[in-house]
Image 1 (cartoon, rainbow, N blue to C red):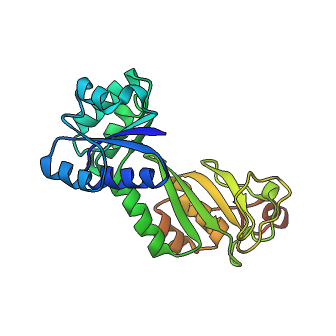
Image 2 (image 1 turned 90 degrees about the horizontal axis):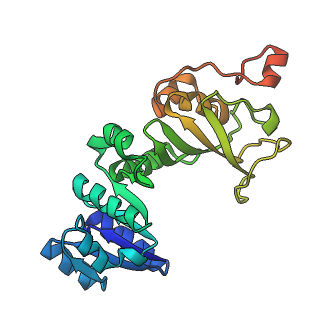
Image 3 (image 1 turned 45 degrees about the vertical axis):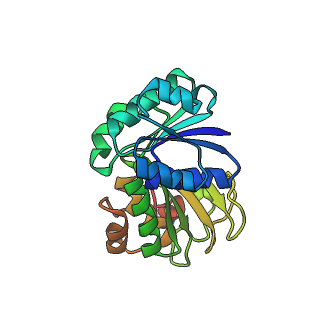
Length: 248
């Protein structure tokens, strides 16, 4: 595939290296001379100029590109570049700063294909390292939505239940399931949950602590500390039948 990346700084250059290592064609657009030299020293083709100007992007090959990544620190440049990319039927990815996260996401999310904020992605990686092996944040889908992978533990209230007996909070959905070290797959209702199994869940931030208590077996205090605020009341169908606690 062919990609145009505006901005050859830290984020743009690392993204370009990953894509090139996977066999894709990359053209960078940059206007800062030292940054241009650094990218060219790594054998990247670089178009010198302002990435918010259509003639510059046309020189970079936007008309033939599969996607355009506007990855500079300048929000206005990024948005303008994405609008030009849209005009040329490119997939568009726009970087925003963490400080702009909420307002900018709401304003621009419907006008580009993807909004990213590298600071948050870096924080997800740090959070995964701190939390250890039973919980892994995968991605933020929207300001209030996150995809997480959780590993069932011996202490999990749902250990031994089937998928059909699992009832997560209303604002959470199971996306995929994997038996221990097996590949993830779409879950079926008769699959049994056992220690070591993994569930990928899409959830609102407000209910992540409930989900963690249910699938990992954290105490309410541990779940609240790790996943943020939210209620600690959970129940399951099987527990409801036997008058013990569980997930709704």
